[in-house]
Length: 116
Image (cartoon, rainbow, N blue to C red):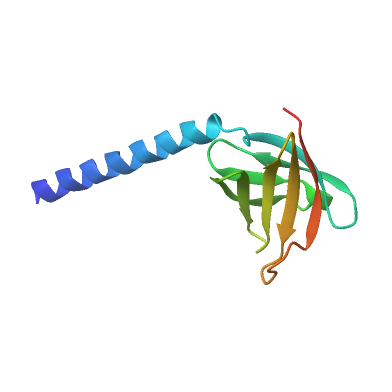
């Protein structure tokens, strides 16, 4: 029984070490921070990408939350609403694209400006 307990502790420690390493990677990532973008009606709102992999937005005071990770030149955000948002480096700037749960093509596109 003790060996199973030690094995479980080692597994948990390894898992926590991986999470910590991933946090450092996101903290140093160009996408971590707050972004000003626009919704499909042209209304500005902010998306904050935390180093922990958590995403938050204040679109129309909805208080959206989700998770994010990096895929190539994009930060891919999966929202609790079922939508997906990508902030993509395009040359010297950034573009935001948003997809509803069933969309193959972006439902909305706007510029993305990093605030911090």
